[in-house]
Length: 312
Image (tube, rainbow, N blue to C red):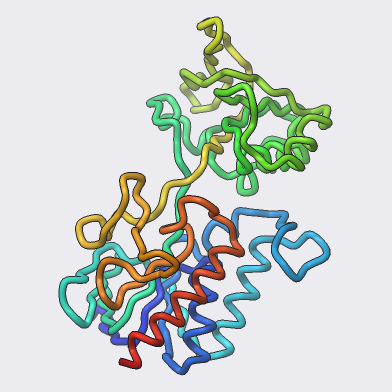
């Protein structure tokens, strides 16, 4: 028999936004239920070195920070449930949520903090070699490429961080970027440029991932020079895609107002969505900043606004 549970407040997602919302909601005696989703801790669990989160003079680890937030949320009264919601009904109250296990949850107010997921290039060859040399998580898979050659695709903070991290294992890291300048923070760019293991291919993009068939194994990629329109084969043992993330908002698409890029719309300076009693915080609604500290701040806002809504 599947579980059926009602809570005054449910929080979807267990990243900085979700856990912060849980801490504030618990302190307001709302007794929230937090549903972790498929990736407990969110993107921070695949981020190793965190050096810009306030309050720490030394580099900390993303998974450790998430564990600390979870522990604090639990200590003040949050019920953390390891489950993933696949269907919602926000047209009636209480709101209804169905998990992939068939469990049903209902609530009077809902905070959505489902975060974002990695973007891919969209190549058939990329799909073919996912898990066989193609990855979107250097911290997850970097260890497997010790003393090997790898490619990193992208030009933002994610790509820079992945490339730098991979130098701990790989013999050579080639960063492939489709433009002639990086979008990452200046301090990250400086670290890239002085690292002898890193080579940057400007104005370039991968056209095809190539490799062995039996067993499936990446051997490199066909890379196009956008200036000369010439293709070149680059040998590599692994390819890491780091071109950003897209918001995890699919299950809300036909019920909440969502912009053309998939981010949930909220009112200015607020986490209030298009449905009364539903709030959104963190990367699922933040198209601009996408930082752990801003996500945490939005989680605080969502909890305070949910408290105000429920009090009425």
